[in-house]
Image 1 (cartoon, rainbow, N blue to C red):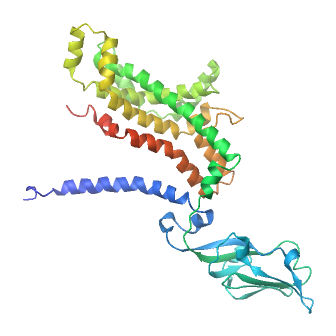
Image 2 (image 1 turned 30 degrees about the horizontal axis):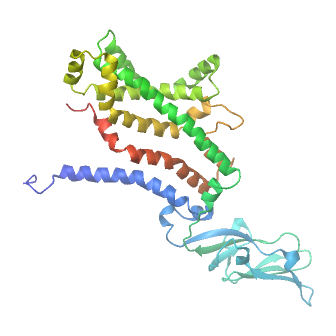
Length: 386
């Protein structure tokens, strides 16, 4: 009764739920990256992207007004500085929950309390941001007092991260150059292995010659070889023949690492094409090259597009191969992945820049994937059934 018309068996529901769960697992990180790219570093530190639409408590570091320009001496000889922490424009007017004068004791004072800074120096900060700083001549001079403010800040989104990455002087030129450098690497590194693999796949699928089975087994075996094992020997070879510090070397490296998957994928597709078409073409006098160009390639477009997606995504997001084979101390051949790392600096704490740069970087692969994704499943499933 479980399989009567109009009802789906439990295994179908389980499959649908599993697919939905996998899709969500892939979507959530991308969505989080997108949301984080519009948030400030304080917001990212204070709360996760999933709570970005709700108010969150944040700790903000501010300084009061310059005491040398704003202090007033009272009749008792006490110097006073008054103002509002919101005057600097670094923080919108919000209600302050607590505050402190040291990062070691955050939230030491509630809003409205007076802090004793020693030797008669005091600081009072109210919930509305107004403050009163009192002390003697030596205390109320020089550098302004630093305050650590805990406040519940409403959700706020900004385009400042994108302006910094895309339009700030220096960054704009670097990112633009890195973008075109990446295209210079990716386009040939995607086309070259497809051209070579298409010929090899046709030969392994439809041409009889000694050792064909061994070559197919070798291709399958190369699929499981980690590319890290070949980096140093291949770099030494490239240096010996003079292509170790330019685009040609990285093209050849990506071609070599991508060929096993390309040949395996295309061969499985081509071997599943109708044999009658190839035999009829041979009877009509077509050469192997004519069969390949006029029949096989047009029919194999889904498999070619499927591998192109994989190769494009892999080479675009690659950092290791670019660092090893694209050696350039002047930065003229820096790719996107390396440029993103350089934007973070040595400390790597600018999470908002990382999120923005990463989302800018994945924009092109996303466009390529969605433009060609209809061929992806057809190419991957090709040859799996008869």
